[in-house]
Image (cartoon, rainbow, N blue to C red; front, side):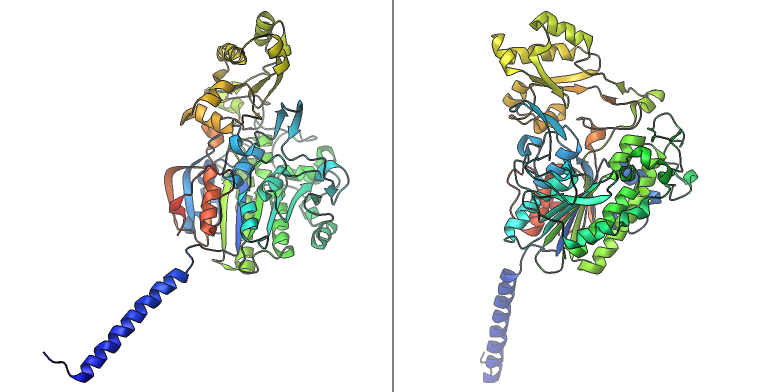
Length: 554
């Protein structure tokens, strides 16, 4: 069949056009980046937030805070810390490094430094001076953090053009998320000061906008009574207000609403009393928003990072306990703070132009005295060195307690010089002590440093302990109190254990590059940093052991 010349020419033109279109599409696909580059990443750590605070208080939350993140973002329902001790310093370090204490080295808020024979604080650094205040409150740096953070990797990836700023009431809640290369980290000093401060590690003087903010005494607006946001009778998700399981402020006869903060001010540390109230979280949001403006975060196409830690939830939990109306009101009000934060981000950075993740640095145990009053197995442990049975054992077996150098964070540190003088195998001493401790009523499991170093545990309590065990920094014997048992006062909640009430926390993602949905698959704290790394298309932190959560990303 012979086609007319005009038809042949038309077919050729169509064919050429289709080929060009295909090649053009291929080129466009090659040129398109597979990575979402939001203008700003906001990392939020809520100190001492149990997962069930999300569900228990759900009906009291508005539409713009937690519910916005869950409804439009991604929720990991079975999210856990995979190590112990579960405390603030290790928690913030693990979120931002994608690693566990076995790698990043922050094995507690405080720990015994066996190389230098002293007790150390995770961010204390006297080689730097305070900025914005006289005294040691600003002498801090991340020098004990052994690996890089996601914020460090962002700085490296952008050749220092991407800004990183961290804000928290607690110094460790700002210093560790900021990493080694942060542009700034700010924390709050109470007492008579009521100021946001920093360290000479980051700067020589506070920026003018911070100085103006401090001079404005903006925090003074919170020197006012604290009452429940809603009618106290509507807080049915917590126990009666007047109970025996909550701590008292000095000058307060009962732990009940309302709290007249101006009247309690002087006897309770001045501005420090605000830490124990929802107002501490409000102060944090206020300053974070000033930071957004003052540091000009999210203003261009180079990704910046704002790390925020809400610390008052932890102070309130320690003071009043996880089932208190005070803690419930703190979370109801925190939801409003999140809404305020998101609305400002929508306006200043642009809706769909930023990415947020929210998690916690640990959970918490219900007050054991409350649990035991309701027939639950729970109670309190005493000091191991104060245990007469342990003292008698040490005397009988080793001639005294000189063998023990330190006991902290549920770990026993042996004195290497005494061990050497006894002419005994260190492994044998570890095993002998472990057998002894395992026989004690309030201890459920005991492991030795030798076991931690020679085995690869993959599940259960030993897996959690091993991830928290750092060969150079951790102790010689690790012991685990029975579930429900703590070494703490009879009022208020605490944390630090390998038990599930301390490990199960929320994880939420929202914003640019994030899918809508949820998962009941187990995820772990070290997975957060790799997930954000994949989102941004940057290198993982140098010690990362977690894996990206693929379901989260578009």
